[in-house]
Structure formats: C-alpha cells, structure tokens
Image 1 (cartoon, helix red, strand yellow):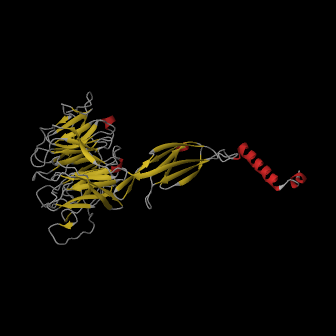
Image 2 (cartoon, helix red, strand yellow):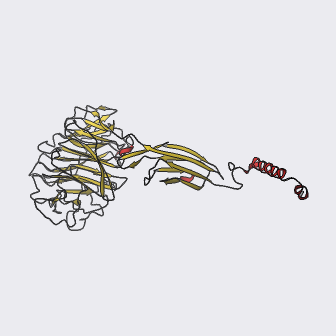
Image 3 (spheres, rainbow, N blue to C red):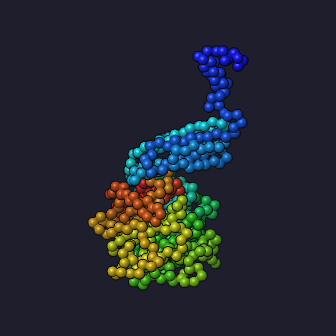
Length: 482
C-alpha cells in the first residue's frame, strides 16, 4: 500500500486524503454529535447590549436543583443533560432601566455537546405611575392591609370601623366596629390593624386605637366562626394600654409583625410640641418608641411576653422597647427580602425624615428631641454620639412639605421596574416620591408626578405586595402603571 501511494502523483494523493476525511466526518466526527463516553454537556449564555460596567441579571436553573446567577456572558460546563430555564430580569443604568429579551427561554443540554442561549438588553420605556381608584365613600380611611395569601382588602376608618373590599366591591357590613370605644378628637381614633402571620389558622388580628380617655390601646381580636367577613365582637383581649391623656396628638399608630414573628408598635412622644416631658429619650416610658412584643401565646394572665434580644429586657429601661428617640412614627415598614426597617418620623417645625436600619439591630436611638432630621433641635449644637441619623430629609419650604407619610418598599409583581424602591408622600403636598437604599445611602430620589388626590394620610399593602394610597377625600387608590 505504501508502495502504491508513493507512486501516485501529488494531486491524486491530496484528493484521496480529502475523501478519507469526508468519510470520517460522515461517520460521526462532526461536533454536533456527543463525544464517545461523555455524560455532561455545556451551555453558553451570551448577554448583549450591556454598557461597560453594567451587570446583567440572568438566572439559569435546571435538573437536580441546579441554579446559577450570571451577570455577564459565560459558558457553564459539566451540566447534567436535560432542560434548562434561562430567566432574565431588568437592570438599572443610572436612572433608567435596561429590559431583557427574551425574559424567559428553555434550552436543551445534551451530553458531549454545547448548547447556547442569548439575552439582549435594551433601554426600557421609562416607568410612569398613576393612581387607580379601588374604593370610595369611606369615612376617613387611615390604613389598608390584608391577611397573608388573602385577596381581600381591609381598610381602617378612623372613626372605629374596619371595612372589607371583596372582588372589587366595598361590603356594607363592617368587619369590625369599635366606634363606641374611641374618638376622633385631635389625632385620635382607630389607627391600624395587623393580621397574625397564622391568621388563616388562628383567626387572630390586632388593633391599635386611642380610648375615649386618649390612652393608646392594643388589643387582640378574632374573626367569627361563621363569617369570614365579620369579626367576633366578644373576642377582645387587652394586650397593652399606654397612658396618653394630656394631649390629643402624637399617638403614633402602626402595628406590624416583623420578619421575626413578633408584634411591633410605633408610639408617639405624647403630644404638644417639642416633647416637653422628654418622653422620647426616656427609656422608662413607652412613648416615643418602637415596641416589640411576643403575642404568640397571649392570654388574660399574660397578654404578651418579652422577646429575647430586646435591649432593655433585663435592665436600663422598659423591656418592651426595641428603639427610642422617635417623635411620631406614624408609619414604618419592614422590607422582608433586604431585612431592613424603614421609619418615617414626622418632624416638628422644619424637617421630615426617613430612617433605615437593619431589622435585627436593637436599641437604636433616632435622636428626637435632641435632633430634628439632621439638625440639632432648638440649639446650634448638640451631642450626636450614639444617634441614628436619617437617610432622607426634606424641609417645610415652598414645596409645601409639612408631615411625612411613610410607605413601603415595593416588592410586587406588577411594576418590576419599581422593585426595591421605598415610596413615601407628604400629608400637605400630596406628591409621591421614592428612593433606593443600599450600603447606608439613599439614592435615585424620584418624583412620580402624582398630584390632585387630596391629603395623603397613609399607604397600604395587600397580600400580593401591591401598594395603595389612602386619601383624605375618602378614596383608596392602587399604585399602577400609567
């Protein structure tokens, strides 16, 4: 054979070798076929359209609980054969948003081969917001919430009633009516409610109101056995009463369960102006504080227990206190995914503020009445040692600010561009603003151009984490895409 090949002319020899190579390729030498003995495959994910310095947000999931987050183009190797889902999320670039295409796709990975997927980012249409009316004809609505996993909306009316919106309709019969137990004098009334995290099984909810004498009252109630839209009128269990008889303002007002399962309550400093008794800085009184209570085994003999970790549980102050130095924390919010606590504390005469701290950080002193916002109160200088300063402030100026109305960090599904932003308003001006918070700093403050809806008294959040605005006109609005 070698003798035969050696006698062939060179052109014939080249032609013969080419034919042999073609024959080998036809017999399975191409790259489209699995390599002999291969048990895993590869997946190349290409991210296009991203400017320099901007990371993508792509998640690849597949067999055997495989999950990988990608921020740039890469090839994933050693993958088990099977179907892989490639999901892409929008990313921010400055004040704008880059949207991915496609948002989701599925790729089949085979042994010994490399599959491919591509995601292209492009500038998204800027988000614009509107307020969509969902309820009207209410008597001074102050708060909106819902039990976990429930499609209904529960709206607190200041005069002492809780109303239910079911399937888009406001039910005529109140869920609860305690109007004979409270008064709307000054800033008093029924101010909020919080559903127990296990409401679906135990039916417990908690209310925060001021008594006819002006004292702050926290009670546990229970839904009736025969009607999910009506509370049992005989189920009241007193949890805590805080004396507040002198002034009718600064009652605080919000109850909320934290990610730790404990009940939090924000109380005002006792009223008047400037906190004349110095309640907010006095850890031996419960006014001007954020309280944390264990109400998971409440009974008449022991309405609440002190959770481990409360800063004054053993000495130095009232054991119920979680944080202090607050003037009137009308509304605060837990951002569960980020484990952050946002407190919107109403200012005195010049400054409104939002404070942000880690959820598990106990004993914070938010500064009132040593400071108002970032400024020393009624003094050119003050000792700021150990005080938590706000991340956002705004003044009582030509813009019309007078009293901050705190909201929530958006974690719903309808407005993904808004994810992670904290929304807030002002009672007098009625604007809607937001900011992003990261590494101790607030950024990207945005005014959403909302106006002419009356005094904004509160925000609300439903079980799907969509947000609502409650107006002094008696209307409730969902924050929606324009």
